[in-house]
Image (cartoon, rainbow, N blue to C red):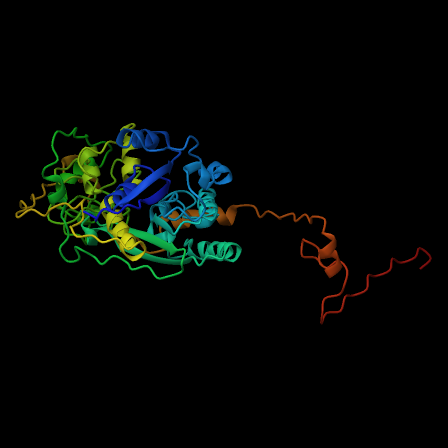
Length: 451
């Protein structure tokens, strides 16, 4: 338990969802004073678990950013301790590569939510800005880090603050979460000092899926759907469809790399779970080692939510909330690091949301032969030819080649007086003075009819 302090560390939660980030910060001694959430099932989940928490009436962060002020929450500017949130991850998620349009990063309309989040940061000027998201949010072509740093520089210039962004990708399993889940964590302190990142607590000794699920009882076990589900019994624990390829060692039903990684992916009792998806298809894992989809209570536990945490909505809505959530145990580790390095808090006990390791784990189940209905697929598929050579890439190239080329019409807007005086219009076309170092050819005179 953290030591008791008179001053409460306040948090304004944006994109609250199922409340994983809030719950972890709460376990580290913080208090969420208000939540911003748009999704109706998630709002019902917040009310079910924290009925007394202030849930802003309008959950649309674009509207909130235009109207909210510190006074609305009983605060003064610079008084909020932490502004925390996980903006929509779809524009930056690796899973979006399989969707139409792919990952678009800041070009995705949903990325406007990040701009709204940063406008709220400027209104409150909290001591810490905390963002959690998928790895693509902080690295690679879709990274938002450069745009966030630019915004923070403008805020610093206007308000004489010293926000400096730091980011890392942390594996939740290294902090006791029974799941391999890489998450980008971004921290910006108002005083510009460096953040002391939490040291891994379970590196090399991860909490396993069996440790989390062995005592989860009274569950409603969902049934398999889709054509390929019955193949799960023929795949060993901890493996996916690649086992059923020529290279994998099983009966070659598929060609290597012809499917996505989580296709028919099964948990292993003696390892952490694979990353839980927010929008799984009928053949998307991870599946239970008992060859079935995971129950809602099991998904919650693999995310390190405590027993009794409730999630509202249909099964699809529940899975989406759980898959999008920050693992509370990872959030607690980050919260403790913030509490110690920024606010001078001390912690004497182990993490409150820890899941204990069991002494023994049962042996893995031996996979069965493939059912007869899949025999017709054996040996019919070859391995994927390589990047840019598959049927999808060829189809995209063919579509691009056959698409008619459109000419873009550029309409220049009227130039301002100041711009006109410089000789350049808003469209970038020279309108008065000649460019330095270039000669402007004289316009040819029209020929006379006499000539």
